[in-house]
Length: 404
Image (cartoon, rainbow, N blue to C red; front, side):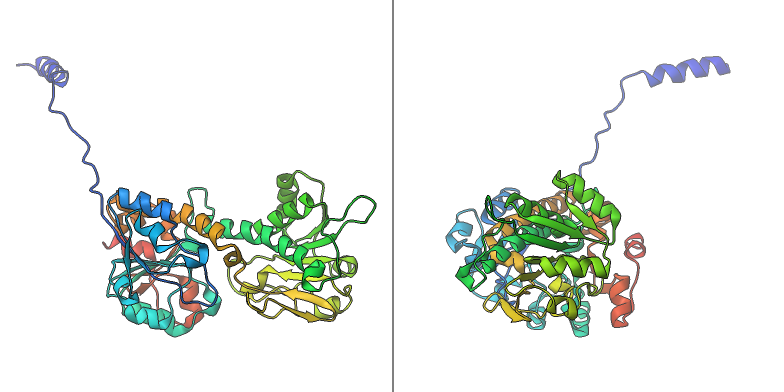
């Protein structure tokens, strides 16, 4: 047979019926998820609401919940048990699950209850973590993921954004409470009415908190001034609120003048790492009006106002230079039910995707956004900032995944 005949034969065979080549589907993984009751001061949020638990159970996952976990967000044990969750009455029983899901980071006592090689998904809250927190997690060989560092396909931190929306809205409503007589304020209606000058609000920071604080303040009829050193953020805020708002870069003399006539100041300076910078000095606060209100949302990063001191939901305010200060770090827990739904809306699809991918290792390999949240992988520290802050060794997560 000559070369041309061989070519024709091979072409003919190419068009003959061939054996069907089916795509080999990934094997789904059934996950065991334990949700312990939060022990942190005044933390009332839950990572999964009953509706989300129902979705997970219907997809073949097991959810183990400590009794009373949802009380702070107005969810009963019955709400969870009716959708298929297993209710247990000891914390130790919950910590036998292969995956632990929490809102706050675990305490040192809770880490002692964790199993070797367990998966932990919770917030990280860097500023409040002692060095031995990381060392104890590493000794347990756990894989720890900070849900506030997980990115979506657009590169956004969805949980941070959701909690920031809540904090921005709530900050204005809190200020409105303390301006009224109900809390011994100066008796001012937030926003004002016809014939009465409107409330003057100064917002420090044009990020998500600042944007939603601006929206709420404008909606109530207030006059708003927004300060930020990022002109791109200021332009974006103008565009998103669809309202011509006074904006300015942070110039001390201009800011001080605005503060002198302000009724409300919202501290919403955001930082990716480290402490929030001090924007308002003690001298500036001393020149503010008596009965005016400061809500320092940045207090969870140290505060952006020099006179700010951490308070809590039981004793949320103090007065200095005649100015009411509200400095509660966990504002979202004030509206725990709404915040729980917001958390659940982000966490539930992540867990479902993990199961569908065939397990955590495949999920971490496949999704860059998930890798961004991993700070300990099988006992090895993978976050460079944490390593440098606490003088601990670390390895790049990508190198560890390549070695798998």
